[in-house]
Length: 156
Image (spheres, rainbow, N blue to C red):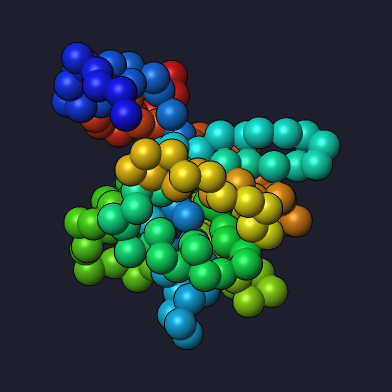
């Protein structure tokens, strides 16, 4: 085990300088629609089409993703900030605009939606990196919700 002089808070603040989109990772698990806000999302490969999402091992969604074979990713629009908050552990009285694609819940109105079959998972410290092979995708030209320095932003 290696030790680092870098404090977790300092590391988080440094990485907060990287602007990212905001996604909701979704799955159908134990008869329920489940979702979690994530900005640790990245494309991995075009051939085959692979994406990766990092999930904290303490998150309830972690257990769901370990058990399911398929999961969804919805890239939120600027109008969906309330959904990001809701699925980030700050539940609000919102009607979640679920969209069903072949039994997998996605978020309607999102800038992009992906349906993934779990390809692999990698242990990575306090997170697990779930790699998904994209089986279906759709997108719009709406503006995405951006996360930068611990707050939401819009393009432009």
